[in-house]
Amino acid sequence: MPDSILVTGGAGFIGSHLVERLLEAGKTVFVVDDLSTGSLDNLAEVRDDPSLHLIIDSILNHPMMKDTVSQVDRVVHLAAAVGVRKIIDHPVETITTNVRGTEIVLDCCDKHGTPLYLASTSEIYGKGGDRLHEEHDRIMGSTAHRRWSYACTKALDEFLALAYHQERGLPVILGRFFNTVGPRQSGEWGMVVPTFVTQALAGDPITVYGSGEQRRSFCHVDDTIRAVLGLLDAPGAVGQAFNIGNEREITMMGLAERVKDRVGSVSEIVLVPYDEAYGEGFEDMERRQPDIAKIGGLLGWEPEKSIDQIIDDVVAYYAAKVHG
Ligand code: UDP
Image (cartoon, rainbow, N blue to C red; front, top):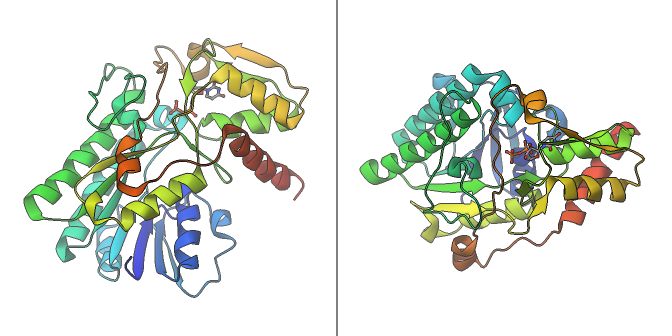
């Protein structure tokens, strides 16, 4: 792996875990983060590491990005507006950051032929259901539903990255994260596991949206980071997209019960209609389960951590926060 890496969004939930692993491996790490959803607290353990260069700025600052990319051997582009709540509440910011931001990152990488890892998302499959493989059709709802803007911005990012690869020979790798969870993930933008955990710890009602029968597959961030590091080192990954997720599914009602049980909480579990949760006309997907045969075939990677380990790690993180 190269010696110096820029991680955009490096103060975010996934980014901060990646930055820690890269520093442990002896790399020089540059971080560009505007702290819009990330936080310096996420980097507290590595803030004083002399190999970490922290730039608090937006990826939309083109001259700064040009200068920073010129100093590194590789870029991992994680900075994006994420979270269903954020996408619904701040659509202009979501679309601009995700589209223009990636255009800028790609332009800067292209100047020096700097290899790029682009973080994409399972959301791009849209309403598609189980065992989603990388070539699966994408099924989107109407543009009247803001939720789908996120999927479209990330799909456009993928198209653009592949275009740079095909037309200009830029080495790009696309990693599609499926519901990634772990310590430092915030519930502020709607993510379900930290939301349920903080509700359970506080003894507040656990809010299950819709029927609670919808299912998700949750992957521990430690497993996700192993996959990203593996892809960065795999020449066969260039020009390809990979699902990164856990195949095991759980319903949201099942998750609420499991969280309540593991916390030992007195919280009641309540059903909240989608309209109340997200406003009128919200569309959720029933299932979103990855097929991980492709990354498994290339790297031998598979997730190791169970849903209970995921919940316990998130509980430990939030319990420590509450108790200072
Ligand atoms: N969800 C829920 N209660 C909450 C937050 C989310 O029941 O307080 C549901 C949401 O409707 C979805 C699932 O949990 O079906 C996962 O939501 P999240 O926003 O974490 O990720 P998504 O997979 O939808 O991108």
